[in-house]
Image 1 (spheres, helix red, strand yellow):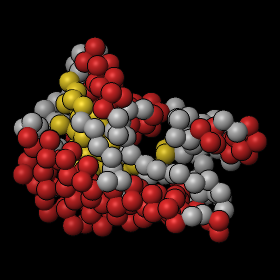
Image 2 (cartoon, rainbow, N blue to C red):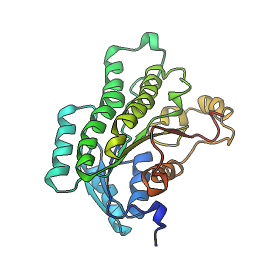
Image 3 (cartoon, rainbow, N blue to C red):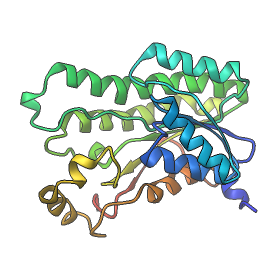
Image 4 (cartoon, one colour):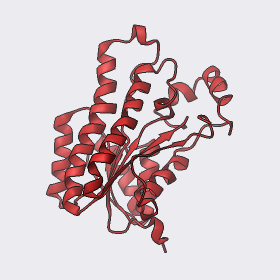
Amino acid sequence: MTDALFDLTGKTALITGASRGIGEATAHLFAKHGAHVIVSSRKLDACEDVVAAIRQAGGVASAIEAHIGDVASMDRLFQKIQDRGFGLDILVNNAAANPYFGPMIDMGLDAFEKTASVNLRGYFYCSQQGAKLMRERGGGCILNVASVNARRAAAGQGVYSATKAAIVSLTEGFAKELAPLKIRVNAVLPGLTDTKFASALTQNAQIMNLLLRQIPLGRAAEPAEIAPMLLFLAAPAASYITGASFPVDGGYLA
């Protein structure tokens, strides 16, 4: 039996970038705690694989593909949610882009615009559209997956870091505006996590040696170690928390 403080029974949660990594781990955890999880990413077959695994474990899930960097694709996503009669209680903005690793002085505008269109415009538009559906339900919860880079910009990831800092500000702004609608908005700041997204770092021994010396726990996180913070913030346990950002970073920001 699920503890009432962490019970998501009867809730519908949309998770972007949920075909792998932190998004996939969060989808499994939310489903385990009773939520109907809408698994979304760019590739429908990858979403359906996650949905199949959730159902195999006894959970409830649906797959809807979407590209968070494309407004028309996001419009289709939210229209499908309505057409299927799902409603929305929880939104996890997790899909992210980081197409360039290197000095900002050499970064092309195409890479800049892709990073900003997914990480900033995508989070904004998903939050905007998700909040409209939550308003119809009498409230809800928006969770933004940012990064420790929001507070401490990383060399070679300057623009990515800037978008993550903007997400924290966006979180605080939406939290103030949406509170009267009973919609809470919070952010999670993962540290170095062992995902395909972070493979440019985790697969480089020289970079990893440098990074691990900065993490008191001395290792990268697993996606399943980030997901519980998202569960906490989505659940009744966090009913009085909004506009806050929570590092899950092994002590990196300490």
